Length: 291
Image (tube, rainbow, N blue to C red; front, side, top):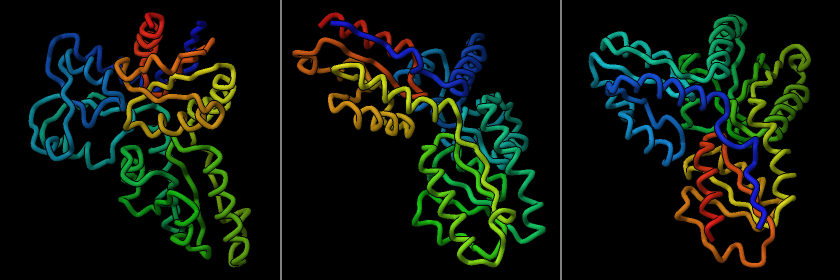
């Protein structure tokens, strides 16, 4: 059997950056806390736990004093940094630079829009860590929408600036953008060409993987998609592969592989999410070779 590991799969820049920062910080053997799991992949989390990284939630964070806490790639709202200052917590900054820039753009735009009775709209998933950080830049006054049904939250008579969580599907963002534009245009109170600004903030490293994986999935008899079960990016990219190749299977660890999947197959492709480590993809390949 021919087995190919997708060269474009594995950590995106932001996740790889956060994991590298964590690895360097743990070199001295000091206990370091991570505000939330550093990555949505249990295998990688366990590897870093063995080095001394302890994942905590926000309630535990507020109880800490005089320690070091890593901010993961998703980023955090301003209140997290205020708490750290009050509690003498040293922040290890590992927010994805792309997310950090997006936070800054929203933070800068917000007071200007308030002055003209405008609205900031964020297209994202409710409760997602990145979205919490983005909403926090406006004091949680931005309008969060997750799909067409939420468009009703937007006042078409007031200026709108639209941003997106970086890991949303590009096509979904385009549909939402068009719906908002048409709603403002139909209302006719403001000119959508000047009163509606849509910013391109879906990460290219995420959006570019979809067309590549469509071709990759079509090129093999069977696809093993490797991702943590909590990864929203993983669920999305798995569905992309599955839509092209019905013989696509989702696994989070080598133990979940079923050797019967490979009966009668000549080629197998292994790919994964932006939160899937390369070493795990290679481990999956090695295990398949033993079947």
